[in-house]
Length: 161
Image 1: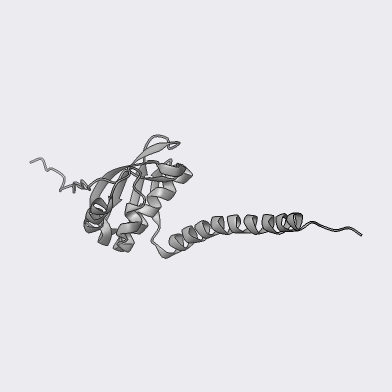
Image 2: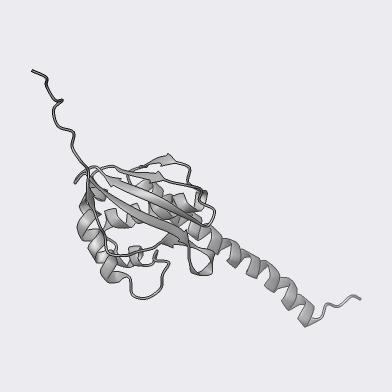
């Protein structure tokens, strides 16, 4: 008669449970991303973002649109309390992100960091940002107080007369 020790039986049951828990954690993050993606206006993109820099910028636009101070502050890569800067960003761009299109122009290559210009069509403003790898190898934004730049409107063509 073959007997299986209690230790082996416990190990045999624990391995599938641990793997299942790990896969559930990955699935939850992916499901959260898909839910965010389907709940928000599309982000217009120019340039060549990496997968990670694009996801970080999408999350910035989504948190702005939702008015989610804590969610935006959590994307900060610099440490410290980013909630005051997040509140300022939401005050400056939140309504525009929720109501109108946001375009992200990605510059350079994005393997570890990437400069991005966010264009908000409602107030016709542009904000330069830096997305990069932060703690725990997750991508986020260098979140400082916003410095919006008004987009210049082109006037009528000069006349010669």
